[in-house]
Length: 161
Image (cartoon, rainbow, N blue to C red):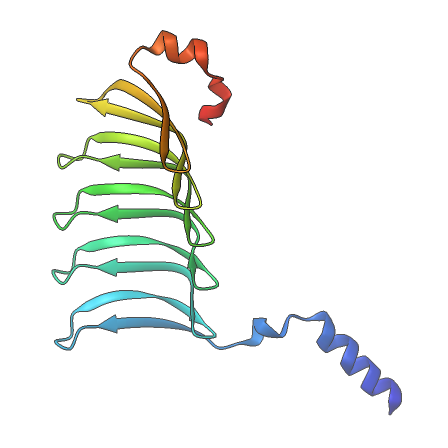
């Protein structure tokens, strides 16, 4: 009997019991029955892939959650279905590179983020052409370049990765 109890304890401790938690696919609707969001929930927290919609039914944003926080790559759209911005989240905070689009869907600028703050480089575009580069430290602009050659001379290109 004692060996059965030990064996049960060893088996249950080897498995993550949260793996046996209730996982469900959830849809949220307005009072009038319009779908606003849908995705996976585990232990009351959003997880995995989610989609959010405008009341018109068009996609508003989509991406992944990890333990209730945005995590991974996300896409955001305007009400007329143009890509507005896209980028990475880490534990609910904007991180790495983000791309922002103008009202016509062309790239407007690309920025590096760390914990929801501009931190690193921002590349500004007009009509599809790079017109200036800026450098930020915790949302404060520390430098600006309008010449590619000056930028290259003063910076390590590896920082753009």
